Amino acid sequence: MEPPSPILTQAPLDAAALADLRREVADPAAGAVLVFEGTVRDHSDGIEDVIALEYEAQASMAAKIIAAIVAETRAEIPVRKIAVRHRLGRVELGEATIVIAVSAGHRDEAYRASRAIIDRIKHEAPIWKREILRNGTSAWSRGCVAHQEKSQNEK
Amino acid sequence: MEPPSPILTQAPLDAAALADLRREVADPAAGAVLVFEGTVRDHSDGIEDVIALEYEAQASMAAKIIAAIVAETRAEIPVRKIAVRHRLGRVELGEATIVIAVSAGHRDEAYRASRAIIDRIKHEAPIWKREILRNGTSAWSRGCVAHQEKSQNEK
Amino acid sequence: MPVIQVNYYAQLREALKTGSEEVSLDLPARERDILERLAQLHPRQKALFLSSRVAVDEGYVGANAMLDGLCRVDIISPISGG
Amino acid sequence: MPVIQVNYYAQLREALKTGSEEVSLDLPARERDILERLAQLHPRQKALFLSSRVAVDEGYVGANAMLDGLCRVDIISPISGG
Image (cartoon, rainbow over all chains, first blue to last red; front, side, top):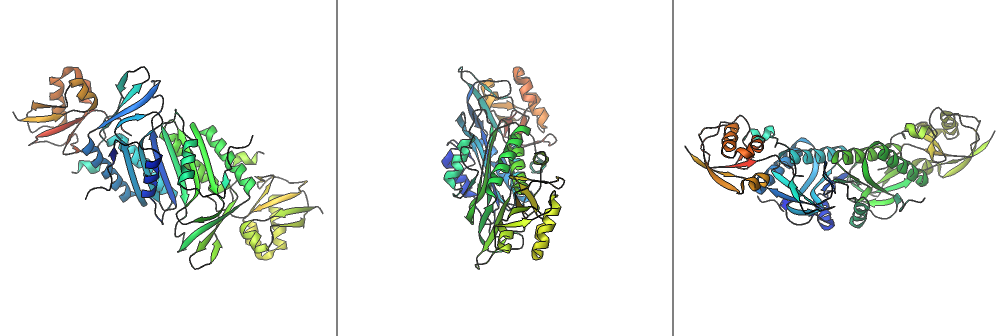
């Protein structure tokens, strides 16, 4: 079964995309909706004048891992709906690089699920970003060694 | 100095209002934006067939307390910007009753601030809701005894 | 005995069929004294009064403050916002 | 010695100036054996290889699996998504 829309996208995660994701998680039993956005900021640890990020992924593996993270989060935390998009390609200052929308009966579940998903994506999804600076130079971000969840180990 | 827009509002917190709040917290130094919505769900503890909520407040006190909660959260957690709206009047199933938008350099601060604000508003702001059921009846929600923060005690 | 304005909201306003009334009250008084006086006046709402908080000038007075010179208080029954 | 296809991404792809190469490799092997073999072939990227993970069929193989019959592996250098 194909997902209704690709998790990894070259299209901007702009206000219209945010509104779409918000609608995707609408649910009459939801008392809380939480939308997390990672956004491009003008600096990172020790680096000034960032004007954009450029994302690359092992896309099929990243999509599969993010889908597994969503499924495992749903199994662990009683939420209603979850929708995730992660950008590929160039993302300008202020734009969203990832959006995670979660609806749940109660806010505690929404916060826990949202936080678990972003933390796991950052530690597990094979995605890399390059920081593009105002002076025209760019460099790959120092990353973290990919973390393997137990569930993936059992394959 | 008057706030730029009232915290308590009779106007729907719809997609356009969410987009406005998102813009209010936009910040070039923000790496994370979190938008929390409390939404009307079709049931509450032991009550089925909720079709709407109706909110009443001691509005001037509620606005002052929410503004103090926001200011205290800013003083405790290094966030960039915070915007809060709480509905008054009738709010239909699926609509937002409260929206809390937070931008921060890092996601941990965004999650902590967002969660602290919603938890404190629920425990401190003099706001009441009535549940309106499909069968035409309605009843005030069982609430919590208002909690007084130390900071308010020192006045 | 001073007379002060007491304001009600939500379920208390509905139960008492008024948003405001004048009540004579011994001052100085603590929060609990005020709530007990109101419960005495409106015994059917005693449980609601005794789980309410008193606010003055848009702030909760707290359990320990000794209040004097009051003109107006707001009675904040258990809240359910958010 | 079997020859397998090794795929590179991001900083490794750039540093090696290729997204893919054929590498001869003793099998069965663990993740660490594969990374050390690649580090030996590309000594300037040794630190990056030794902090990378190996993936097969869109999943990390993990440190303990004994791998055999491989045709293709992806080398996942330290990640920075989100």
